[in-house]
Amino acid sequence: MSGSAVWLFFKFLNFVLIAPNKSEKNKKGTEYITPAELDKQFDEKLGEQAKVIISAVDTIVNKRLAESELRLGRKIDEIDSRLGEKIDKVQTQLDGYVKKQEDFKEEFVIVKEEGKQMKQVFKEKLGVKISAV
Image 1 (tube, helix red, strand yellow):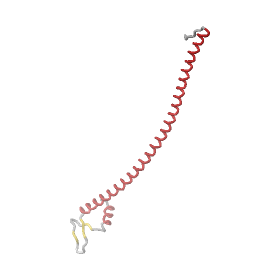
Image 2 (cartoon, one colour):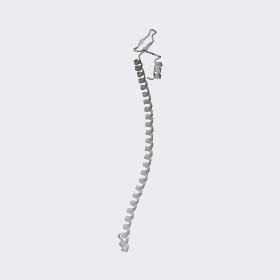
Image 3 (cartoon, helix red, strand yellow):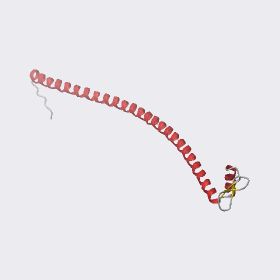
Image 4 (cartoon, rainbow, N blue to C red):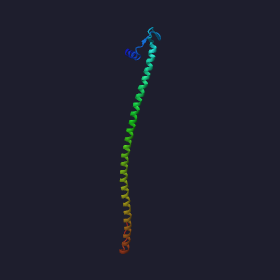
């Protein structure tokens, strides 16, 4: 132990005096303490302080972790919302494209049928047979 640590410990213990070998009291009732007992008490106090510090740090870390999880959840919701909007936009565009293709297909069927009818009329009225090469 360093000198300043010992001084602080003495101040904490209300200036308990160190006896050379064992705990005992003098005639005035002043209690003496051995270096081994002092080390033991010092270690106990350090252990208690470590528990308090660890508990405080744990509380702070848990609070910050909860805040981070909350911010992350908000970010995920925001990204999900934007992604949903983009998907809706793409789906709308795709639906429009599919509708145009279906309209084109229907128009093609109508034109094909009209072409058959025109060939039939040319054949019946003009005697001309039209065919594809």
